[in-house]
Figure 1: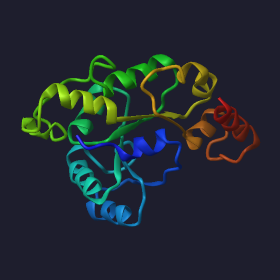
Figure 2: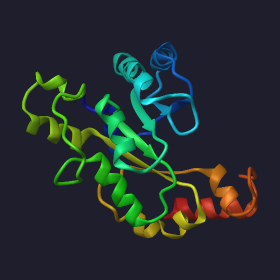
Figure 3: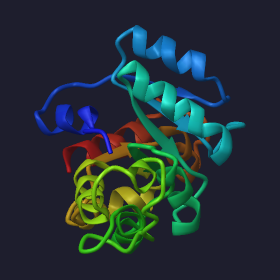
Length: 204
């Protein structure tokens, strides 16, 4: 598995920039890499991207020096694992509201001892079984795979002090659209009450 330059930049405290894509297009991913973006979010939740057509987008990202992050439709191992086995460098898990849900996301992404992701030593990121030992791959994957949790309800902000205590989470992302809806102001991300809740989350 390749070293996750995005994760390294975040750990160094650097600002990173990226673009979300909702349709399958490896050439667009290559263009984003050529433009100097740090990451591309490959959106399976709201777009037309599938597990199968994500693979060439992930390849394009790697070849272009941009980190491929996938947003799956949900927080379940059987949904998350196929994207990781195709080489995604991380996942952005939607609608995480509680520490238990955060733990479940990490558990689905990481191998033992950090989690219980199913081992498939013939996967693409494992070099199809021809690139060193399975143990080395597991160590590399646990070190490099990024976990981003989306906070999209007031409940998530209320529980944020507990969420940040969950080991293995790299990024928290506030989804302002669904957050505004959960507060009764759908689509009004600039509403003062929505802004106040977002600011409260950032302070945590």
